[in-house]
Image (tube, rainbow, N blue to C red; front, side, top):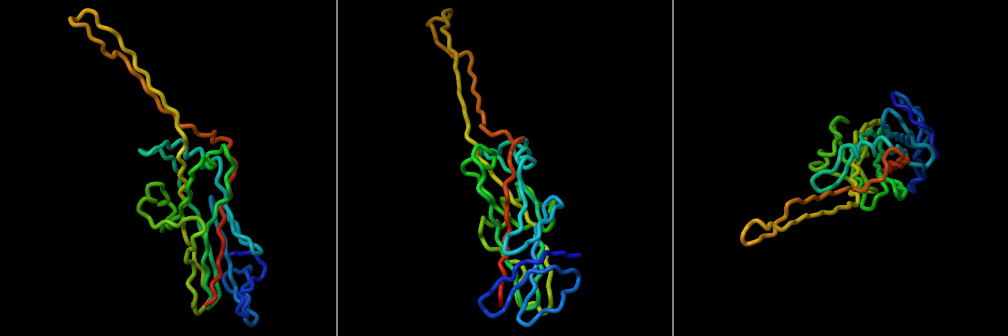
Length: 226
């Protein structure tokens, strides 16, 4: 059962009014030149419904940062985490509904605030398919890139649920050093100098994920008038 919140009317510039509304299984009667649109996002069984002209939101934070760090770097030294979520839409006959993603600016000195952090989004047929590895072969969307949702021209009110995966990739700075110890071998003739011990290490400099603040990810509905 779909439940979407009442929102402010959105002017389309065509004489029609697109109004987000609260609906269940059956759409309520419409006034002339009105359409009904609904939009919600669910992550970790928490649903945020669009109200007013705002976007729906979910957050990532401590849990995702701890998973990213615990999983460790790949061969390129990149750390990544996959975040599954759902987008639920409803549009009345003759109207479409697209949407786009955005991510708030992260605080400095946090895991997701490291320079060069990237966010990509791709659709999955099941949320269990949301993995970091899957992003390599998927068709990905960037922040603010429009996504086709409900295609316009439907003959009746239409609902649609899209399943998504967001992959956050972080490349932290590193610190490394190497040391070599050498000694002279005075027994051999002629005398030779050979290394007899060496050591090297590489450390990734990553902020403490246990204090990672929440970072908002927004999904903005884009009504389509056909």
